[in-house]
Image 1: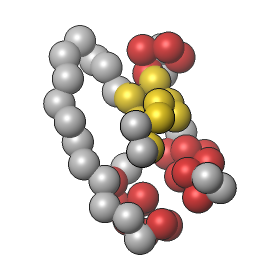
Image 2 (image 1 turned 60 degrees about the horizontal axis):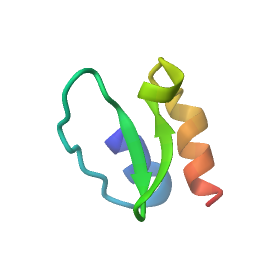
Image 3 (image 1 turned 180 degrees about the horizontal axis):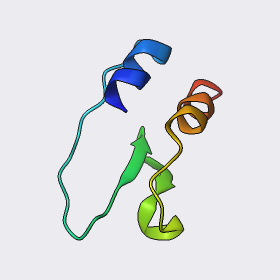
Image 4 (image 1 turned 180 degrees about the vertical axis):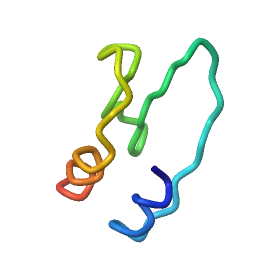
Amino acid sequence: MAAKIKDALGEESFLIEGAGGIFDVNVDGKLVYSKHETGDFPDEHKLVGELAAM
């Protein structure tokens, strides 16, 4: 996903390791996606599109 964000937005992204299968996406301190809440990994194409619209 980091490569897709870099290609689409020109922004670097970083993995912060967690535990228990948590996969959250934060932008400027704001939670924009949470696997914990949805139970699924994000659709990368859709998520990158949403990030681009921000």
